Image (cartoon, rainbow, N blue to C red; front, side):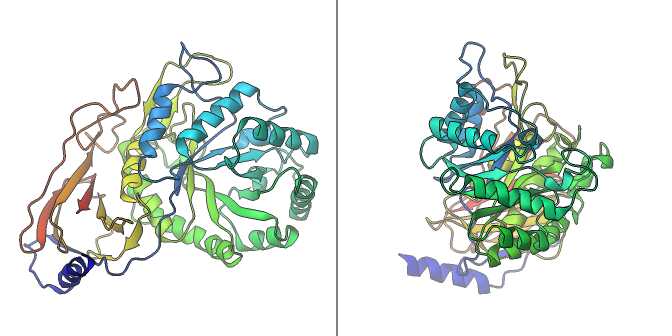
Length: 464
């Protein structure tokens, strides 16, 4: 059965069919599968605050609507969603969270099915505190639930905060190695770091590896696309060089980690640091940005990203009003970036690999093609043009049926009113989408189909 399909795909790559005037010719080559997308590539990062729970529930449980929103993201791979517990709170925490918090974490891990990254307080230098964290984690989390323990958070920001202004890097590296040695091997089998605030400079990676030979299981860093100083201008998330600059910035770290045989993951990232920007990080622009960000970095070889948030941070894909002082969760909201993560998860699902796609040189038109383990091809399209639609003439490569799912919003700065395949999470009380599913099945003629995307919108085409 593979030979006729393969022949059809080959034929589609050499066919010469004229596109209508103004249409962008798009051609996919499924005969050359490339880099695989890690099954748990996208994830979330959350501070050491409790997860939301229902008013009628117990503090040891997680709100069912929150869990359902996670399940939606986890529907496309067996290891589905990485969760990191950390952030600035990790290096400020003074005692081990209570059993209820760990039971909540266990519930989240059971839903996401991907081992957790747990950040320990390195800044305090308290070996016993770290050991107590590890012991409590082992008591409440099942075997295999922890990918590793990350020592510290953003040490390149410790100057004048956790350490004196004349603090030396050599001292930090020694502190990391000393803590690691105090915990390995009996207490902590997998060590992660350095959680660098500014990516992963190769020289920093080199010293980390030299000081901790054979002891690290993953290298981590942080990266945010924009400064909060850009102000309430969502269109700046769609500037053509925003995502490529991040890729260029992170590529040396990716290469350094892989040369050492280790994965490199952004343990914390987002559209803008400091909680994000109101009207930008929580706008429809963030949905288009987050898909571009994930696809571009996965294609560049990064091993994963964890989008920071939780609580009411503007950059949180899932916002909630829970914290450690108020014990009733009243709101859980899927923000625009959540829709982008959901569409990315589907495009990258079922152990997908990238395949080549040709579509011209329009920097505002972003396309990625994938081929999953079942042989299904998908094409993710983002039209970043603010003022005009795009028409595509797509070579369908022997496909017998096309399914088109659109992601739209009332405007670029919209914070609600989004529709994914006709459905929305506006007004959802249980984490399930609301409304009737609306999918399109474009007609195929002579191994080709014509599609139109409105300005500032996205779509996923599945080719069966």
